[in-house]
Length: 224
Image (cartoon, rainbow, N blue to C red):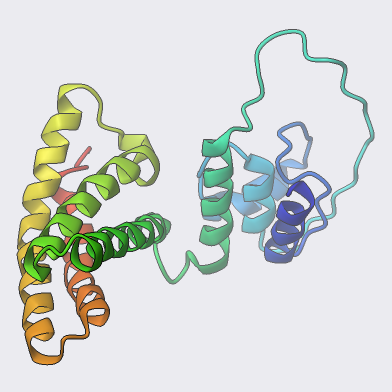
């Protein structure tokens, strides 16, 4: 996994980095200043950010050293660091066209689609629930899951906690209500017309995506 991540980082930056996750390095001041206007400031992997933001390919030389056994603390390389690493790579590859926060929102939305389809399939095909009931349950379950994941990942710098988490959850549900109503209504209308339940469910999902992202960034995670 480490070699794969390094290969992807080198492909995107155009720079040969043996350890793009490293935070131990020296550099010329002019190289830093040249990269500064385009830094993403996502996560804490500044070496990778600088290399990808430079207006020219940087020459990097490794000076070998050997780690001793860790005496205190623990590694910062957890699942959150890997997520930020992925977002940084996406930002440096397609971020000029699509905001990285929307990319994160869309990726989480994709997981919500899988959850939505799974619940819809379970309720409608196996538990014999009506299509409207199954679509409604799947919609609001996906909304709650997306809220929690976006709060933890997409809006980590504006993460809601305590009472604000509950207020944010209510706000997110209110924001998504219009999209959810349109989701269920359009899916049911299409189902009544052609009975292609899976396509109808996916069409309903697509209706609320843009609304959910735009309005939640204003009313749910609206930190100044």
